[in-house]
Length: 75
Image (cartoon, rainbow, N blue to C red):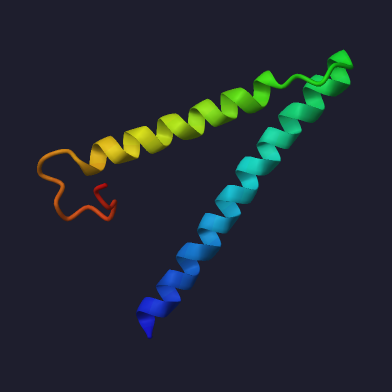
């Protein structure tokens, strides 16, 4: 039973973090558009680059020696 509760808390925190990320990207779009009147797609490209970099770092960390107990699955 405690495992299910911890899983639910983890899912809620992950959902909140994803929502905050979406809100920050949207706020960046709005600020750039209101200031210049031009919709700048580079903001989304930078967000995608940051997300892919994070995924690469997490995968590299999971393959590092000495981290066999890590929660990140190895591909």
